[in-house]
Image (cartoon, rainbow, N blue to C red):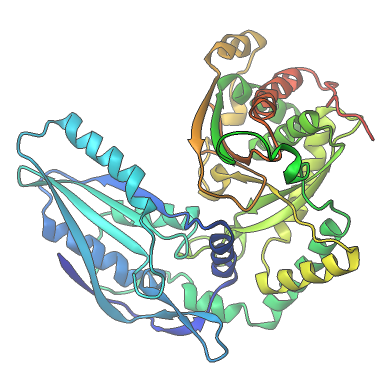
Amino acid sequence: MVVNFAGADAGTESLTWGQKAIFRDMQESGNQFNMPGRMHLPGGSTVDEAASRLAGLMSRHAALRARLSTDGAGRPCQAVARSGRIGLDILTMPDDADPADIEGFLADLWTGWPRARFDFNHDWPLRMAVVRHRGACLYLAWVLSHLAADGGGHVLLADDLRAGEMADGADREPRHPDVLDIARSERERQSRQLSSRAMRYWESQLRNIPPQTFAESARLQAQSGDRYRQVRFRSRAAHLAMLAVARRTGTDASRVTLAVIATAIGRAIGAPTLTIKVMVNNRFRPGLANAIAPLAQNSVVTIDLADSTVDDVVERTRSGSLTAGMRAYYDPDELAEVIERLDSERGYPASVTCRVNDQRAMIMRSDAGANLAEVTPEGLRQKLTETSLTWLGRRDNMHEQVNILIEPKSDVVSLHMMWDRWCLSDAEVEALLRGVEVVAVEAAFDQEAPTKVAAL
């Protein structure tokens, strides 16, 4: 079904810093990082009402009306249309399909549809479908391009859809910055100064790093099987243990999780110091909290692990990640220039090839009462039997050696790890992930628990 839309804002602007960052990640990794979503529709919903929801969403948000283009210098830019047309797929289930059939179809759609790539120069960055059964519209399903929004923006768009507003294209009050506003603001002097300060921080972190975070990639090149793999590790015991550490140290769970992961990596590879790439949600910056745009950007934090307690590492991670967060809003073109210069001065190319992405922070949602939970040694021990490690199979490619996603799950630490098997064997990966639980449990009720990482 063809859906017409019209919005208030239109024009052509440079890419925002967040768009540049994610577009560069897409080019380097070959992955578009598309984000799926779904919602249950109220009883009696019609296709026309679903079309109205889609038209209202497109009208309200300039990022959904943006396509890639090229400026006069041949650089990527974005063109936001004032109006246009978009397709709404109508997926009709057979009349004899039972609820399990429909749920199975939706699960397959959720898995497969995000793999279909967007043509950024011609496609709108949103695909949407309505699932219909026996004349009733049951679900809306969609796929959002990461070039239009980050995880926090995706949550805002989903909330907008669930609100059921059949907007006529009029702006809401108060009006939030859109991608055109953000691109213009990033050319202003104040923003350029922010970027310059971030570059000085990045230079201090990158100047003395090794060529890669882990061993040279040729170390395990003869290992049979797929080069890139992925695994998921889940531990309720680690979750409870990290809450205990967070409560004792007065630190939030996100930074405790990063500190524990860093300690486990340090134990696994014998690294007394670790530089990690982290994703930072820039929505804490004035005016950006409710913007529909990709605002998360990489930063880096260096953590000393040797001859310390886990509590020491938690404090260093807290302090270091605060600084890293303040230096995560910058022009990626400037960073590329800094990296090129440092590679030349250092005499060898180097990059941080370990990334930890706490998706709980990216979507700005957490268990508000988590740090008040009652955590006891006995309760923690009981949860150890529920720990799971699941091998998820191959990945097509990666541009880093290790990428750990901290998934937004409640009551459990859920780590989705992707890695290059030319630098870490399967056994080393399992030891690393299980080590996260071991470190957390050791430190839960012992403020003197050592990292067990020795200085070189």
